[in-house]
Structures are given as C-alpha cells and as structure tokens.
Length: 241
Length: 241
Image (cartoon, rainbow over the protein chains, first blue to last red):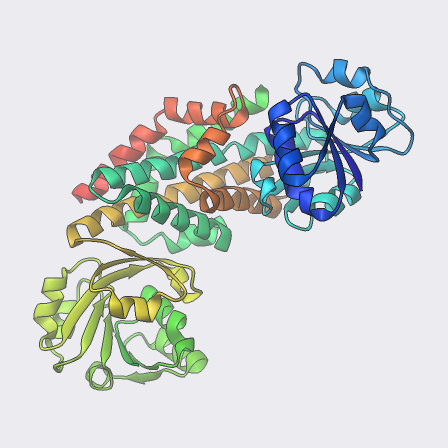
C-alpha cells in the first residue's frame, strides 16, 4: 500500500516500525526530524512535507498532537478515495472527518509502543477491514463499539502502570533483602506476566487462595488497606477527566 | 530416571504432569487417591504405598504437608545413593536430611502450579544439577543462595496475587461501563502480561510517563493513596510471619 504518516511522535514511529517489513511504500512527514531520519535510515521510508505525504498516499495515518491537528489538517488538501486512520485519542472521528474530506476516516486506532515489535494490543473503533489488514497479522486488535466506550477502555488500560509499579516495588524490596536485583525483577516480571497470559484472573486467584498462604495474606492485606477501592476511585476520576 | 513422589497435593501433581512426557518411570504414593488415579490414567504412573515408592526410586520428590512429613518420612527406610528433592516450603533442608538419611537431600524446590504446562518459574535452593536436569528444559529456574534468602523470595512472589487482583478489578470496572466482560479482561491481561514479559519495569514505566496522561495520573493516584507503602508493609508482615 501507499501509506503516509502525518505526525511522527513515539506511537506513530512505532507503528511505522511495526509495518515496515510488509512491503508498503511509506512516506512520513518531515516535522519530527530525528524520528524521520531514523526511519529513513533503518526502514527506507521517504521523508516529505505534509502535503507531499498526502499526495503520495492512499492510506493516511494521522498522529498529530492535540494542539496542532486542526491547523495542520485544515491546511492540507485530501482527495476522494483516500482512507484515513486516526491515532489521536483526543479528537472524535467526526472532528477528523470534517478536516480531511473528501478523504474518508475509517477508524480511530490506539496502539501501544510495543507495536514496533508486534504482539501489541490495539484498541480500535470504526471500520475494521483496513485496520486488520495493516496491523492484525502480528497484533491483538480489540474492536470497540463506540468512541464513548473507547474512552472507558483508555481509562481501564491505565491499570498497566500501577500494576507494573507494584511488581517493580516488590522486586526492589526483594533486592533490599539481599537478592540479586536483576534476577529479582526478572523472576517477578516472568511470574506475574506469564500468569496473566496463561489463565483468567479468577482461576489464578483461586489457585493462590491457600488459607493462610502468602498470596492470600498479601492480597487480603492490600484489599483491607484500600487498594481495590482506591483503584475504582482512580478509574472514575480518569473517566470524569 | 526412576522417580518416586511422596505426597501428592496440587503442586506435586503438577510437577508429575510437567515431567510425565520425559520418559521417566514414576511411582506415586497412594494416599491422595484422586490425584494418583488421574495420574495413573492419564500418564501411566504406578501407584504404591509409601515404602514401595521409596524402594522403586532413585530420585524422591517429597511434598508432604507440614503436619505429617515428620511421621511419614520417619517411618520410611531410604537407601544410600538416593537423591531427594524437597518441595516443602516449611521444613529446612537439614530437617528433611535428618529424616531421610542415608539418602541425600539435594535441593529445596518451590514451583508454581503452571509447572504442569511448563514455562513456570521455579525457586530452587541447594545443588542444581538434578533440578536442572528434571525441570530446566521447559521452566525458568531461579537459583537462590540460601534458605534464608528463599524465604524473602517466597514473600516477594506473593505480589502475584494483588497484581492479578488489580487487573481483574480494572476489567470488572470496564465491563460495568458496558464493555464485553471476557474481552475486557483478555485485553488487560494481555496488556499487563506482555508488557511485564517484554521489558524491565523501569523502561515500561518511563514509556507510560506522559505528563498528564492516563497512566501517569492513575499511577500517581495509587501511590498518593498508599499502594506502594502498604505493599512494603505487607511484605514486611509476611517476612515476620
């Protein structure tokens, strides 16, 4: 496919790295010079001004920041038949559509940086055919029914950060007791990571529910001192903006 | 190898399932009738009284419960040249050694139930050669320098349970907002699990530290409301017994 990238921050760069091996002709905007130069050197993408990116492409992936997307897209001329994927969490599909007509916005897609290597989760809302064709072979695409629901998913995914922090802190504690720090963290990352991937949470929690056992005691301690109720409150706060 | 299993609870059963395909001749004790019958039917192990298990084996895996291991081992006759692996977290290697002489206790090994499928983390303390030969091909063995240090690792691994609980609760919240429950949990399990396996915690947390972003905000909220300090307090409580 002829693919153009408008806006080249961390996530858009990761998307380009994730699809660079698939035989597309990719043109990226010259604004983010460092990312563009690296993608050109490592993956042979073409670097061009924004209008030239649009002119060279059948598919446009738009990942402009909230403060400039209106001015940037408003100053460009799109053509009939072009398909647009928005990687922007802020503006609605309708808001982007109003700026890129007569091109057609097919979907809003929110990947994670690990899409560069593949195996990433991808939240997607809209028409799925192009999204699946571009990203589906090496990633898990989660189709979300509406932009309103997508906002809930964006709130919920933020649990990643406190969950990883918890693992890091337990590993740091173990290292403080004298264990080798890198091995301590690798042990806990592998343990929690592989357990999450292997089974539904309820099955894992049941297997870890030996009365008086270490897992049961630490879980009860965290629940009694408010971890789960504070997580709920934190998610509601995110949802309310 | 000729392998005997004394005590056949969840973990010992999982260990047998994990090594059943490796061409050993395995004899298990008849006390846990249901587990023994299943292993006999599915994996062709022999079921026998405890002394017959000992007599038939060069390697003995001992996984008796805290309340019976002294009486059970004390009533059995071991022979010179037998190697013993203790799966028991409670008694020390020395305590088990005193009960099984002239057999030799090579290591104390604490696996997780996922050892049945392989890809499990295994905490091990003592001589590693036999442990690696038996369990190393399909699992990650973490060699721990002393039994005292092993106790710290057992405390730290309990973070698994609150970490999984956190993912479950965020998924439940997302489902309450109207998302499909199974997909919600699969998304968060895959996201947190694959992120933990892919990179050190610090790298992941840095990538999730966009100022004002959802991940940064939820993490700060959890830290400010005490998650990490309570985790530390909980680990210290486990350590002190």
